[in-house]
Amino acid sequence: MNKLKLLFVTVITLSVFDSFASQGKLLATPGVSQVEGSGGGGIVPWAQLAGYASEDEFAINGFCSRADVTDYTLDVCGTQINLFNRVELSYAQQNFAVPALDTEIEQAITGVKVRLYGDIVYSDWPQLTLGAQHKSLDDGTVATLVGAKETSGTDIYLAASKLHLGAIAGYNWFWNITTRYSEANQLGLLGYGGANGGEKLLFEGSTAIFLSREIAIGVEYRQKSNNLGLGEQDWHDLFVAWMPNKYVSVTAAYLDLGSIAGAAEQTGWYLSVTGYW
Amino acid sequence: MLKLIPVIVFTMILSACSNISNLTLYQQLDGQAGLERLVDSFINQIGNDEQVFHYFEHANISHFRAGFLNHLCVLTDGPCKYTRDSMVEIHTGMHITEADFNHVVDLLINAMNEQNIDHTVQNKILARMAPLRSQIIKI
Ligand code: HEM
Ligand code: HEM
Image (tube, rainbow over the protein chains, first blue to last red):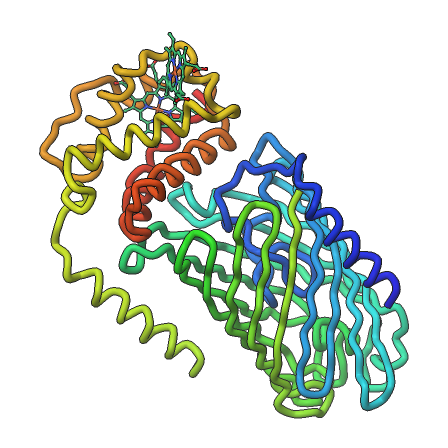
């Protein structure tokens, strides 16, 4: 928990020093930080690389997020480095609290993402990105207990995104689709694989409309597999992102995470802050 | 999937509103007078900007003003014909970077905000300019 607090304080402190921020992208176009630390929405990694670096710049971002649903809380803090808008490296630390069992599950995620083609605003075809997230549980006791085969795993995903200027009655319209190859149970917090299966190809999508340069509202969907036979369900969220400038963004969402580890109807709130340099 | 419904409904309401207007972008910008106010704001933004002013250091301001106005008039479906050099001819040798291009877009947005141009009209102008980027940067 102390690690998280330290990261959180660092994020807040650094957002005050904005002097060397790279600013080469248009406002709001990099998106925000998703729960596994990659640039994205809230639950889906997007094709954009995190941060405002253009092809001649690099960017460093830090974020912290909290998801508070019926029976659980997930805290995540992490950082991304964007190198010349070609490569994104990310690291995130997740802390999943199960108050009923007085237990915390911690997981570290290292991510890499490479932009293969395009620019979400300017290219004729959508921006296309290939990424990987390597996740590892600090302590696999709970995962093993619920029947997971492994305590670490690697997801691979391909994402495509596009911002259509003025497309819907003059408002800017954004969409992203991601296909992920993964064997993770609940992001990996409940381990990898299980009696019901392992690696699967999963579909994820996000779409948003920009009410102004600074405010976007949107929805996300993330398909989940049910490897453990505990009734894992697809995730949904409804989000509002506020990007008042190129130094900070704040995202709030309503989450519907379905059933988690046998506890049904996990709905609740999500709040995330990213600072950009 | 149910959650998408409010978004779809909202989107439909938005489209209903904007379709009331059959005016060209040029007309929505208050014609020639409006374009002139916008271009003057834009020139003012550029003139006060440290990052991109150097591109314009040796430019002839009244020539730029007339040319950009003429181009904007055509871009917004105004009663004009573009009579000047092509985008490629104008910007060749400037070696404009991706970041500086976006910065100029930021300045144009500032100018449009200064002129109280409606958000949706702004986006439609930007949508027509965006495809020109490849004829302007890195040449
Ligand atoms: C497209 C080209 C140009 C643009 C957009 C531009 C724009 C501007 C702007 C916005 C200002 C500031 C005005 C103010 O602070 O009220 C300015 C000042 C000035 N410009 Fe330009 N200008 C251009 C070209 C030129 C050229 C070619 C020259 C000289 C040959 C020039 C000489 C000056 C001078 C001397 C000032 C006054 C600086 C001061 O008051 O401290 N500009 N320009
Ligand atoms: C979609 C974006 C752009 C459009 C539509 C555009 C259009 C034009 C037009 C119509 C002219 C006037 C030419 C004339 O004098 O007849 C012009 C001149 C110029 N543009 Fe652009 N431009 C764009 C982006 C940029 C950017 C990003 C920069 C620099 C960062 C830039 C730098 C210049 C300069 C320096 C001139 C003056 C050239 C001279 O008179 O010597 N332009 N542009």
